[in-house]
Amino acid sequence: MRIGVIGAAGKIGQMRVETIVTNPRTELAAVMDLSLEKAKENAHGAPAFTALDDFLGTKMDAVVISTPSHVREELCAAAFKAGLHVLTEKPLSNTVEGARRIVAAAKAAGRHIGAGFNMRYYPSFAYVKDVVSSGQIGEIDHIRIYGGHAGLTNFTHDWEYKSAFSGGGAMWDVGIHMSDLGRHLMGEVTRVSGVATNKVWGVEGSEDNAMAVLTAPSGVSAVYQATWNDWTGYMSKVEVFGTKGMVRGAYAPMRNDLIVMDGPGSPQRRTTKRYFDIAVREKLKSWKTTAVLSFADELSDFLALVEGKTDGLRIADGHAGLRAIEIADAVKRSGGTGQPVELEDLGPMRV
Ligand SMILES: NC(=O)c1ccc[n+]([C@@H]2O[C@H](COP(=O)([O-])OP(=O)(O)OC[C@H]3O[C@@H](n4cnc5c(N)ncnc54)[C@H](O)[C@@H]3O)[C@@H](O)[C@H]2O)c1
Image 1 (tube, rainbow, N blue to C red):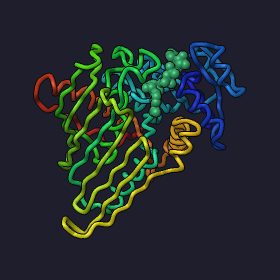
Image 2: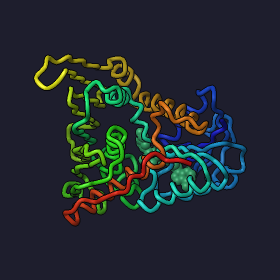
Image 3: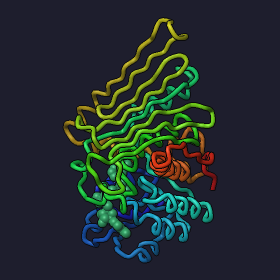
Image 4: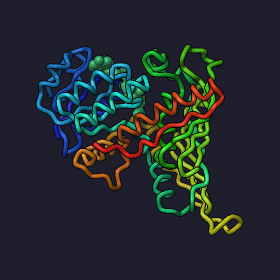
């Protein structure tokens, strides 16, 4: 598959380019960025552009869009119009309406969209999904999901935390991977009750804390928190509690804890996975090495998605990208009214 990359000179765009040039089944068709010089530096010999029409004039099958989210809609619309499949970074858009239009455009064009929730591929979170699917911990009772870091000091650019560009605060940043992971584990999220605050950093429109209960039609609920006030540093964590045990996945550091029993009060079988190889690799090189591996796995799934496969894929589709944004929006709305927000069951996306 011939793939072009928009935003190829960016931090994540460069990693996406790396996965395309190293995958034997993909070829880097072209790159595009705002600066031609920087685009050329990350082109690996492929043609580089600053103008969208020229970029889309190159023969290709799909694009990866690694720009900030406020320009995503026009780029997605142009890509779908050109008949291309799209793999985009999270969040899908900086507005709920924009995300809905992107999904509608994909469906109208009959093209696939991957929504960039690469943390689904992190070994600790993939392990949680596999344990839950295997039935080892019985029927799911509830989930706890958490994403946090110390906020504004972690950002390189101010668009990353200003809501006009990012869509919002902690829920649109570290929290959006975790609300997606909750949905990935529990099924569709159709009811959201919550509250969002921004007393600490005080950036208008950008919550630095959000707490919510997310509920699926099955009745399974998740307690969700996203924060920019975790002064201890970056942490993403998911815990699933079932009738026969529990499983926890965390990053960073990457770690799993699994407790399985025949029923409450029965003897426990405990498993802990610590991923020392990943900790050493990240210490010697960078966290980026873990992210690149997840982007590579996501790319393989994207190829399979485009080929029409559905079984065994972890990739987030357009509905996953949309629902994660709708959840962030619903938490704020619920906090404003004190009432839960009901959302329709989107289910898996068909194109
Ligand atoms: N999944 C993850 O692990 C992860 C981590 C960080 C960021 N992200 C997401 O990736 C995206 C990019 O983040 P980043 O940190 O790489 O940002 P970045 O600023 O480093 O890179 C963005 C690139 O997009 C280019 N760009 C902006 N507007 C453009 C346009 N209209 N046309 C072409 N190029 C354009 C910029 O010039 C820049 O090179 C964001 O949506 C962010 O939320 C994902």
